[in-house]
Image 1: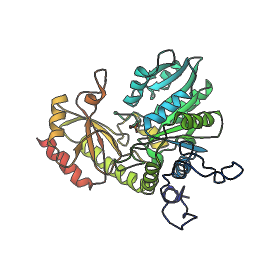
Image 2 (image 1 turned 90 degrees about the vertical axis):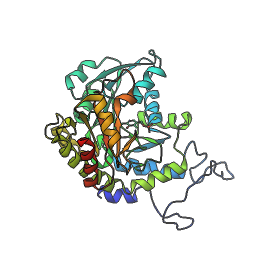
Image 3 (image 1 turned 45 degrees about the horizontal axis):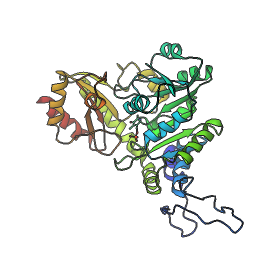
Image 4 (image 1 turned 90 degrees about the horizontal axis):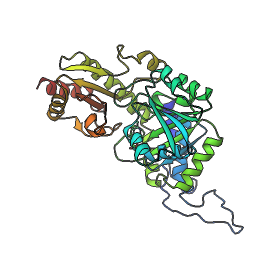
Length: 373
Ligand SMILES: *Cc1c(COP(=O)(O)O)cnc(C)c1O
């Protein structure tokens, strides 16, 4: 069935006890045991498993084409669980443009002896191959990347990882399962910050991991989720399942608007560069066209005049909100370099946009007026 249909029905069935068409929220942390000590429903304690979390995990696994999913309290908790599935001294290859929080986690929480890490341009397969070491256990891709929307060839990166006995993980937050399914391209693991497109309304924090098969990786992640305890709450799982139903519609509308905005900005004299994989001039255009079903609702652009001009432009916007995060119904704009901190390599004039569900003409009007000064 098509993703639109699966997004509405996956993980859902009328409630057996009441007939409720929409699932109830199970806040109970504990579940009754049978006289023989068994757990007749399979549920025992909510950190281990909960009906709302199970429903969300079932739906996420189905949408990504995976064998199992694990829902966490945030995207970072999901990434942290992945890193904890490795052994001390293991080596990880990360993209040079990896989500900023991951670099921070690695440098401030993990000791150098715990994990070795290389940061490479994932769009350059020779660089990925050259970074492999005998102890490489994980190759991580994030595509499109943040903030310059570099495209990694997932199939090729997964082949490099597998040739060296490593797992391939893909942060699929920006594409969402609507536009890209890394497991079908050979990845072993998909990660989402469900805070973004999956939540879709900027009002839930969450993360998820989806594995291609049941095996040692799935077992480790399930164990870490249960015993590490960074799980998603029943209410958050309920909200996320509700949001999944509209995910395909939202992402397609946001993608269509982002394409129009990218073309508008690319033709404007006040903009020196637009980063959007849907533009034919984008270096990853062909690969994105092959592995994605649309180019997404995220873009970034560089303003002529650098930092001052970028700040002034963002200050003149009336409709578009200046805020971090992405994937919500409202269009957001952000000066990335100032949130990334002093060692950021992002150009000073770069603004990143998460295109929302407003009418695209209103968004282009807002940008056009602000660019005119
Ligand atoms: C937001 C984000 C994360 C981190 O997720 P949180 O839910 O904020 O913890 C990781 N990767 C990408 C690509 C993100 O956009």
